[in-house]
Length: 227
Image (cartoon, rainbow, N blue to C red; front, side, top):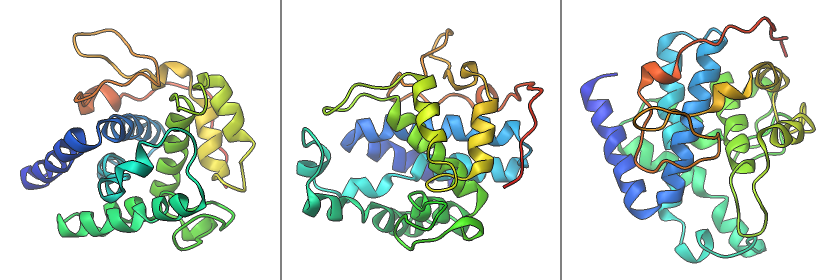
């Protein structure tokens, strides 16, 4: 990555850390999971870097969502949900203004699209959704399910994977879910500062795993199926 782009990424992440620390921690984990997946299953280094940056920025639009919605105990009501659903469009405006390329911006804008076309903001489906976006979509869900919310406890890694499998072909790309099921839980343990491993849902605010720690291929005998 060019030094100027690295600076832009860190500048945005610093703002997220200051104003939306939970969003920043979630974004870092989603990025780490997405990079490990992409590195395992044959994406080239430039695509992996696009996925890394796009996942780090995927929720940047939440900077512009009011605190009364993001910090509300319990689930948002219908009006609040309408406001929350515009965060991809707000995020892509920020990403464009910061000079990120179209591939990164597509991840930011489309990470809530669904495989069957029922997602938002544009209702894209199947081949209309880039594979890089599909990966971030699944890893975003994985981290959300394994993180605690005011209205529910966090799920175990295996329970989260089982729930994601139920959405194959509707919410999620079959190819990505097949890959997720082929990867052992150890691949989703983010290294903690100073050594050791963290649980997949453990928040490590302010820590970005070095790229060489999160791109080591995992030797799995299970081949992916095409979707």
